[in-house]
Image (cartoon, rainbow, N blue to C red):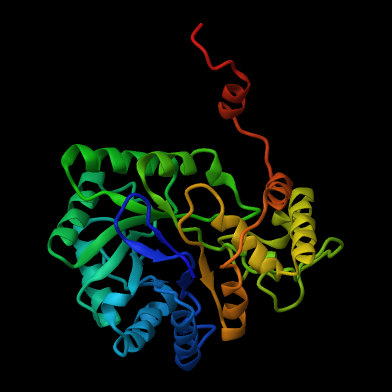
Length: 335
């Protein structure tokens, strides 16, 4: 396992982050602790959760495991925004909710500080100054060490960065977007903002809900019964009918071809591609079993060569939207 700094911060983390959305749901506490032990044994130190995962059970499971570990050797990240109850202010980026959410996460995690606290999305109903000043206070009081976001549009991140800089408040150092070989929309605007502003990219769903593990092949007309793409089991990614087209199969074909050539699993190749993308700090790997985790950990310790990088990248290229296509064709000189 190698280590990288998150964006322009001094926070160093392992190059694969362990996502824990399965904890308390698809993986019970015993299985979750086995996964955490295996990840730590491999040199992993970056664990991501959220207050809404399994209704708070994910944080609680991590907290009970954390009690047996050396706290300072681990980087614990969690997220807040969505409602965890039915109170009127129990959601969003307002001061009342954020302060309550952080204290609740600290109790569930059994720790006195959070290394990376992230907003699950942008709150258009709350002044950005209220959100950012509250987060700054949480850092200054020592409850939170660093700040990040998830599911932000490029303009939302840029606005937040600019306001924080103008006010002298703690900046965001991490962004957690959907990003993988197929879902590459962030490359147009969000990636340039992150790279320009020193914000590290921590991609979620690097396997695209299991699609990039190699179990889905060209010629299939529907998802296997019981799989994650069967029905509406992952509404955040869409359903089979709306998500399968020629480009998706082209990426799938290229991934399987490269994996076969290198004698690697498709999951390892998909993760390795992300690890070598500009601006990426650490993809978030999720696992229901230690076997799945072990396969994902095989993405470390080697690199894709330029030939295979280009093959994978080209397979998923999409036409640029306006004005990016226009600007790409325009001469870059003064008239």
